Image 1 (cartoon, helix red, strand yellow):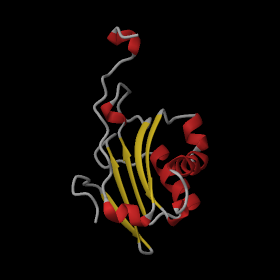
Image 2 (cartoon, one colour; image 1 turned 90 degrees about the vertical axis):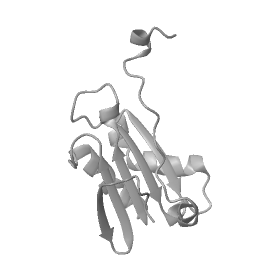
Image 3 (cartoon, one colour; image 1 turned 45 degrees about the horizontal axis):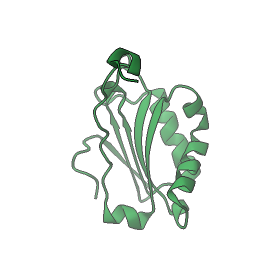
Image 4 (cartoon, one colour; image 1 turned 30 degrees about the horizontal axis):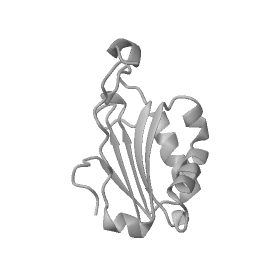
Length: 137
């Protein structure tokens, strides 16, 4: 079951579920988001792939694709530690992480773990600006 908090585009792919929620614009999926989705689908054959562009909640220009949250549910994660799972995701998205993507929050779960808690976590609100503009060390 998908989280009721995530209203977005749901696509069925041969028994797999794919949900996309873009915060950058009204249902708009940009090229970076599309590339992230395609690369994760190819590398991990996920049963569930939920991808959220959270850029709008940060101090970036409108329409940016810099901050993402992803839930990837794949049998490829069986027997792997959370660190090993994150490394697989980072490997698949190395080009995006070296360029346009500034932040990527990852939930990498096995199918059994997702059945126990089928929700994409929420990110805390951005404080805006930088340490220099907020006056913190």
